[in-house]
Length: 427
Length: 184
Image 1 (cartoon, each protein chain N blue to C red):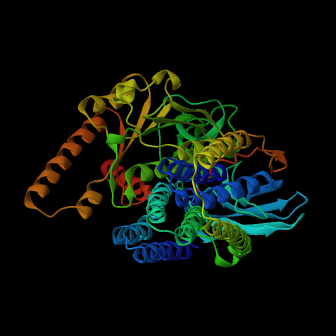
Image 2: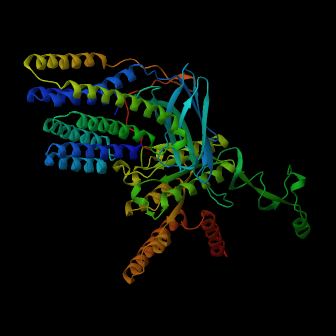
Image 3: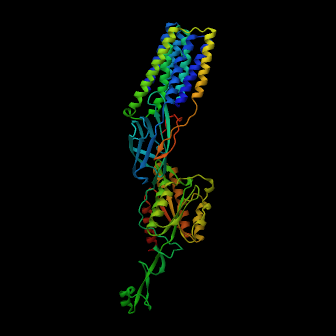
């Protein structure tokens, strides 16, 4: 309640008592009107003579870009630029998702003219963009009971980016490549590092490419052929539909998927590819493919603000806007493919000429650890597993590269297993 | 500050009870004690509860004053209740702050509060000494006075411009009326 309201209320009480006394013809009750009226008058005078101080407020965040597991300091400085003492209380706004680990976010002080008061506190934040917009507080009258509320706009932004792991091996076979050198193997001979095969020497071949051992065996000049390595477009699609994700205890499967997507983006960008990102679930959150460190920042910021969505418009995966993806490019989809209609989408994408890598975030282990031990539940789990296996093997036969990722483990483990199984299968 | 406000409520209740008991109006005295206990229990919950307690106390003070000859004890009780109410509202701004930090503010506030209370008690003493007799002329004069006071305060308490506050070197403006404590 503001000072004026307090004053008005006290005066109303006084006038009420006075009028009641007059109506009841009770002199004592009329006399009782004196304290509230005097109190209200004092409040009004105090408020009238109370000047809001001129303050210079600065908030600076030591590192406005942190990762989920990092901390940063916030420095708040308030200087009194008026000619009188200022009696102030200020509380910094701590947004939802930000935790104060150490220090004080409030400041209560008497500031002499020109004096500066500072506060530093340490924060950690959940993944996302966190806006600190306000600084609330009050200015107290030097004499009297007046208090004036302060509501200062003071905007600063903290970006808490997802943490990601450094992947070492993730093989893709896109159908379309760029002319620039990169790291994607093309199955075509040219300049590269990996040996593709050998052939007989032809006029004009570089003498340094002669395979002398093979030439000695064949008694003819044989040259090595190297596999071209080129850059390509990789589009990472994160399924952010809320019904595709779980929260079990403190573990949110969506957060794990976001981290895995960040790992994949980082991997392909490190290897010189152009990487785009689509978060499918809310509005079309699309980051156009590009290469380089700046693109990594864009992708991380996009992933930082991604949240599961319940929008009906994106309830099915068939609304995926494939027009945004270059024909023949590599798609990396993070999805559990909730329905049978959804399960057909990767196959359709392959049929349209895209190379599809499906990362299937398998949460069955997490659910099992969290919930139950009943026989019926085990049977249900077994049935679900069988259905998943059938669905994934069907996708594999249709040309979709599938990685069944147990989300309780790092993505690199799943990639390692997938690679090992592929080698075992080839043997 | 909150504890002091509660103490004021309890003392006010006891004063009203003593006044009522002395004037053989036990019902009013017991009502005063009940309202006092109620106020102590609910007054720190919210502004609405604090203000409701004040209104209840206003009624009890009026009953107590009309039940007895002297205005002094109900008047002093009302002074305590008013300042207890104001302290309750002010204390909501101080939640979570270090005691050392708010001490300069509290000293000034307490001193101002004490001066206003002393002035009110002084006026009550005069009123108790004079003993207002309400003839028709006095009543009409007081009524006119109250009404003109209401009009005058309505003119005084009007919106006005607020001096700017600089944030990061630029004017960010300020609002002065949002008086509820910030929810952190």
